[in-house]
Image 1 (cartoon, rainbow, N blue to C red):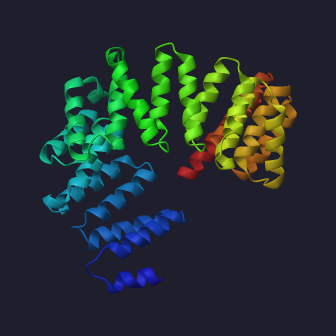
Image 2 (tube, helix red, strand yellow; image 1 turned 120 degrees about the vertical axis):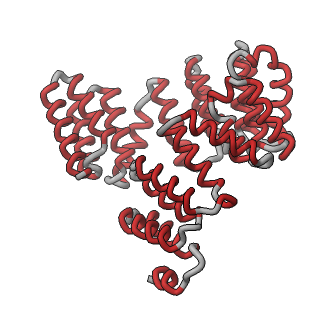
Image 3 (cartoon, one colour; image 1 turned 90 degrees about the vertical axis):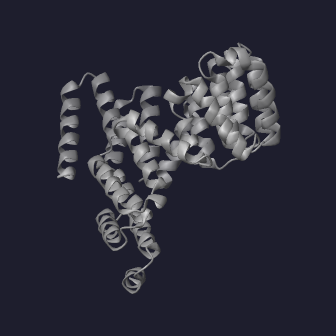
Length: 360
């Protein structure tokens, strides 16, 4: 109420309205947030932020025609010297949902117009079309190096990606290894140098060195769960499940990050009893934890083929989250495996019917 009153009292600034839109969005009040954003656009048509906020709400609801329409209206309403972010947002939208050539050209135009535009260059260097164009990619990379220096992580990440692109890593592997080793020591809290170097060693057939890099990175940063995930997967492929379990014991990270890794390692090793026990405890503590119930049902069926028990857990999950496609598909998969295609089809029909009702 205070925000709404502040909006009535404020004529010039859109900041309060943007705060209200963010608050309503966080509270999942989609219609109210949309109404507030549309009102903000009418009151402050020259503000690129309000048009961007309205476009994001349409994006959340997957209303792509309205996203494009909103951004185009914003570009007509906002002064040319303030509309670069809207142009960039529309370009990214076209890349994801529309005409990739149009989106690519818009980003390239933005980069040409502003030699200091890091954001557009960063996005461009993430696109396969640009990575395949070695001359263009190297020029964009040089622009970032000139602006931010070789210690900048954006530059380092794209430099590493270009080294590993296609067959380029074959000729530049020595330079890449030297640089990645240096970056790993300079920024131990950043995991990308270690993961990239480990991937490069695997390409070279040097698995032992890839393992050493990961272990060194974890010793420097015990919270590097993504490096641990990479190492555990590699050890799992080598059937070294006990070593993989020991890696996870050395991590100093929140339980919610480590538990999924421990579960995947256990599943890979075939030792399902421990994750089943852990998930059972989670479900008992929180019977509405759909993710835990889903994984528990999956592991129970994988271990014992106990369809009755697994489906009972999935029924519990579907009551908490009635239109979960993940839960429904696992139910369907189990029913089909148990020779009950008719029941599987009926379940799918009910799911489709419920989703259609929600969309009306």
